[in-house]
Structures are given as structure tokens and as C-alpha cells.
Length: 227
Image (cartoon, rainbow, N blue to C red):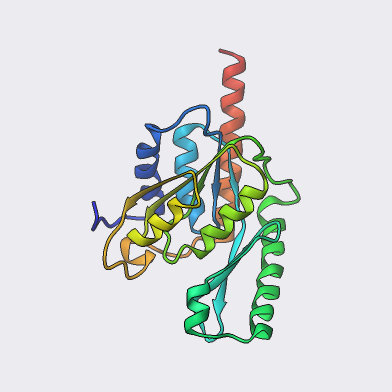
């Protein structure tokens, strides 16, 4: 499956859910998605496993002038990760780094309100978490998410992604309790290369999927009450 191309994020999520189904147990109690692209993938996993879904808000810190390159990432709660190797190769003035961080922090706060509408984040303390994105390149963003999660004291952090470079998967294995990746192609090129449809996920779609998951969980609980 090293050269597999997914039709879209929802299909990738269904395939990932099938893989995770063998691992699912009481220790895995919550799915967290990195918005926006990780939400459609995570929705399918949460649906298949009957788990609640929430977002783990993380923003890439793009290199000034080459924003597609991640010089780091910031996550809810103030967790901050820098791509030290990149910054050694391309030195960036501290003032420029601070400016990018402040801008992305404002966007992080905006999305907190937009996606949750004032609702508090789901409590992860003592729970097993499946952390999902639509793919990983350098790993800076998801590393920031792992760091932020560790501060919240979950019982277990399982990172699950459809596609990532082998070296990134190996690096993430040192930081997460477990990593599941469907495809590890070389050369990697980029996450979008491995999807037929990699259209941007909208804020409206993120909200709709979060609402749909909440409805599914409520219906499931109601069904249990009448079983």
C-alpha cells in the first residue's frame, strides 16, 4: 500500500477506521482531529468506533516568505514546537518568529470560538486519545499537538494518519505511545500527492461534522438507555 492514493479524506478515514478497529478497546475513548483537514478523516474513525470527536487546535508557524515550510507550530494551551533543523539551515530573526507566532495565536483563538461556539474542550484527563490528521509531512504540527496533550495528562496517545514519510513516522513513535500510518511512501513529495481530491476543508464542514458526531453519540447513549 506504499503508493496508495486515497479518493478523498472521508475514504481515508474509513480505511484508517478499519485498521484501528483491531486496536480499539476501553483504553481508547476519544478522537481528536487537527483542523481543518484532519476532521473529515477523524469523523469516519469516530463514527466507526462509536467515539466522541473533538478538535485539537494547532497552527503551523510558516517560514516568512515560504509559508508552506513549517518552522514550528503552536497549539491550544500555549504549547510551542520549533523545527530546529530548519531554523539552523535558514536562520530567522526572533522578531519575525514572534510576529508569526502572535498572528497564529490570534487565529487559534478565533478557531476555538468558531468550532466550539463557546463549548469547553472535551476533558482528556485519564482517557485514551486517538490523534488524527489527514497526513503528516515534517511532523511539527502534530508534535505540538502531542506536547499539548501530554500537559492534559491523557492515559494514552495514539497518532493515526493515512500517509506520512517513514522518517516522520519513526520520529513520532518516540513521542506518541503508538503510531498507526496506512502508507509511508518514498519519495513523499507532500500530503496532497496521495489524495485524488485534496480540496480545502471549510470551517462550515468542520462545524457540521462535529455537530453530526455529537448527534451520533447522543443517539448511541439513548439507544443504550433503551436496550
